Amino acid sequence: MDRGRRYAFTRGMSSGIPISAGYFAVSFSLGILMRNSGLDPLEGLVMSLLNNTSAGEAAALGIIASGGSYAELALNQLVINLRYFLMSAALTVHFAKDLPLHSRLLVGFDVTDEIFATLVAQERPVSEYFAYGLFVVTIPGWAAGTTLGIIFGDILPASVVSALSVALYAMFLAVVIPPAVRDKRILVLVLVSMLSSLVFSLEPLSSHISEGMRIIILTLALSAIAALVWPEGEEE
Image 1 (cartoon, helix red, strand yellow):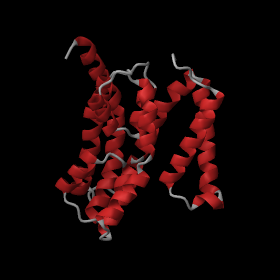
Image 2 (tube, rainbow, N blue to C red):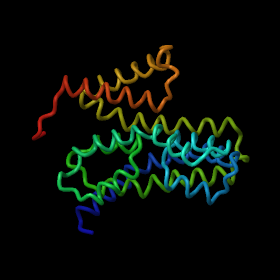
Image 3 (cartoon, rainbow, N blue to C red):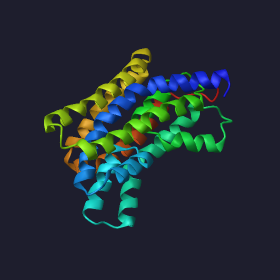
Image 4 (cartoon, one colour):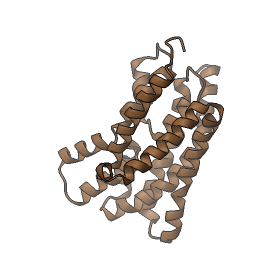
């Protein structure tokens, strides 16, 4: 690995440390759900290594606990995690145009809300090694949290476990706020997104829609509006 790639990888690892800490806190709570669903530590470890999404894993645990079919499980994960397809598509303009397919697949493997926010906040073009550095820190943090939650979940008081979950939201704010301060367009989109999400969750006609599907609808709608209001040229 040359010096430039090594520097990008190291910088990605550094950026991934606070994300990993937030992941650990949230996934510890998820590990308790895994234990209640009958999963052992090894099963929880493998599940979290391959599926880094709290909503997806929590929904999967409900299906597993109820004895649902593989088809039901696959369809459920497709709908809940569909927004990551959109995020991966949006990330294509942030990486070099000649990035090989295998590198794109590796980057797309661990696109989460926090990873996406971190990557789009970087100066273009983003090095794939920066993303790899993020992954080698965040994926183990998520998987370790669920595994230890299965093993030691009953030791900590419920209030402490609940309080740990706040760390992820604080970390996400730390990722979003700096670019929003630098670019007023991002700030406007963040505020409009928050307001739209609140309206969708309270509006009777849309409140019955699953959270994952609401995110997809709002992402498509607001992205289209932003593209029309602030079009980005091909050279940019």
